[in-house]
Image 1: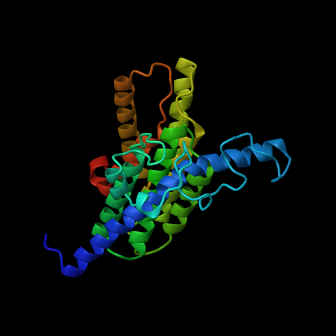
Image 2 (image 1 turned 90 degrees about the vertical axis):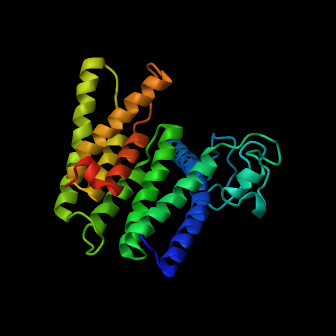
Length: 278
């Protein structure tokens, strides 16, 4: 396939934008769960916003914009040249300039994956409404996968927002989306299918196999990809989860299922024929 100069430039911009946006997503996946924890503590205590959080490392104001980027261990503030996606990690040899502690590989990995997803979206849909919609979908999956992998928790703010957004986007023509009919059925099947599997698993083992966050996440995927994709997504996620569980030999320690669902949804999104969507 031969690309024009304009197409090559557009793809280049997509990669650069993806790297920059990936740096921001690292902030989101680190701070968002902590922000929710503080919010829940305040609501549980019933003492209003002036209550002191029981999370000691959080300052009085803590959100996605403040405080500035810093090392989570020594709180060394990152200068602009320490915050360049991928490049800073390589130049610093994966270590913090302040305390020489190893920086998690999650940071360059999220930046790389975000750039790759931006490239894939623009490669297939160009620059338009469809690219914007699908870009939101895959980036939301990336954030939810990393948050679940770190915390074993899928916030309702993420899963339910993605679900309702999927139903709204299904009403927009020209977005290369499933019909609103298939999207609505996808929501119902996406929630009920893992719910039934979890109840059967609980009945025979006495243990919870999945959380309600997984049900809502698969329902959101149904809103975007339609009910036809869900059996394949669920099957692929189950196989991947089983393989990883056997390799890690975690025993009774639970493994978050959300990241595997997100991988399955990515496959269904990019290669729908692979999971028999049609």
